Length: 73
Image 1 (cartoon, one colour):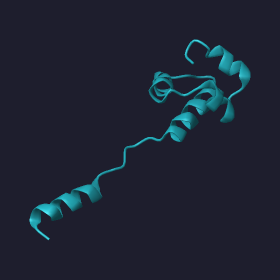
Image 2 (cartoon, one colour):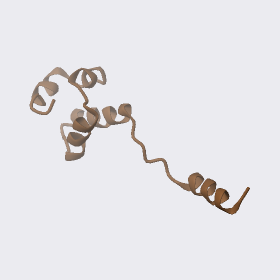
Image 3 (cartoon, one colour):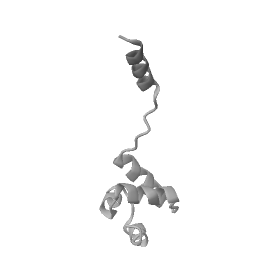
């Protein structure tokens, strides 16, 4: 294996996985709603992933909390 390929492989091994999945985003948003606080990050995750009220209800958010977020969803 040449030096260039070896450097490319070593670089890929040392990088950190910074990906977020849809399930992770739903979990973060639902936990913040259940704690009665909704940060700007959670609002951004809702719009970024297009999270629907149905998905949040399935993750354990109450109907009253979803109705209070009607302007976001």
